[in-house]
Amino acid sequence: MIVLDKYETATALPYGALVEALREAFKKDYTVPLRGMHKIPLADGATAIYGVMPGWAAGEVIGAKLITVFPGNAQKGLPTVQAVVALFDGATGTPIGVVDGTEVTYRRTAAASALAADYLARQDAARLLIVGPGALGRHFVGAMAAVRPIREVRLWGRDAAKAQAAAAELAAAYPKLDIAAATDLEAAVGSADIVSSVTASTEPVVFGRWLNPGVHLDLVGAHTPTSRECDDEAVVRARVYADVRSNVFAEAGEILIPLKSGKITESHVLGDFSDLVSGRVAGRRSADEITLFKSVGTAVEDLAAGALALAQARK
Image 1 (cartoon, rainbow, N blue to C red):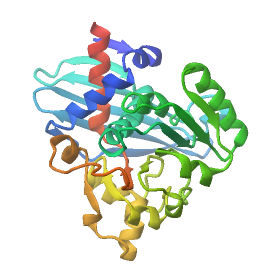
Image 2 (image 1 turned 30 degrees about the horizontal axis):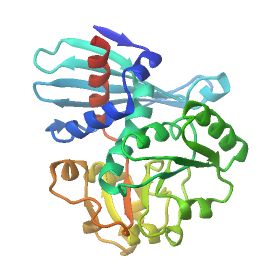
Image 3 (image 1 turned 180 degrees about the vertical axis):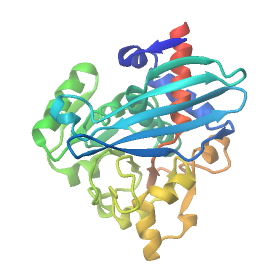
Image 4 (image 1 turned 60 degrees about the vertical axis):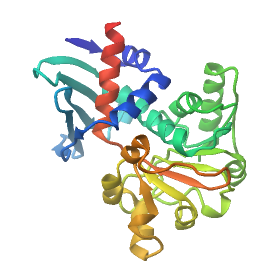
């Protein structure tokens, strides 16, 4: 059985290969049962969460992401969210490996947005804006550059100093790209070809009136029915797609809030990954339409990423 730490996992998951692994995964018949989220009382009175997110593709792979959320870890210099992905052979049930689940989550989330952009962003999309350049947001540079000719990256965050630090770090990692912090979010959205919002905000940070024809809006950060990263106008103006349709209708405030108010109907979400990769639903149709992708995540992505990491490690 192979065990990969976060550095080995990162090395085994180059963005381009991971995008293609996700594309193939969504062509398969994965079963993803409801995840189990369990509350654990802590000695200091806080509550931690232990989650189990299972899934399988019959005869191929069985696995689960095991995740913990400890709210006090930041004060201890530890990540709040930590995880592993455990995988078993789908034909025999034999354990085949454990990989770092935190690194998998970062990379597969960015790669999923890149996969969506491959169907929904303009072919010549070269200017990327990342709203919320934290630990996850920084992965979107490499992921988007794997599918589009990105040459300019702007990063915006509520903390300008942190955005500038992230820009400096990424500029060193990607010296061929023009990378800098943005100070005016509205102007940055207006000049971008792809806008990836990866924030913890519960209220809109991107507004529909800011969106120019041809832009692709990628929404990653909000995951509850009452939180959202864009307003109703952005959703109404766009051709909207999801990673997994049923999950978005259960969790995504960007869709559920305008749905409840009657500003959209369920048919406004045109399709999800399984529709796009199979060709049942068309992606971008013209250079001037606005597209929107809403991601809430699925165990399919964790298992596909974990399987790729193990396959790369064997090589």
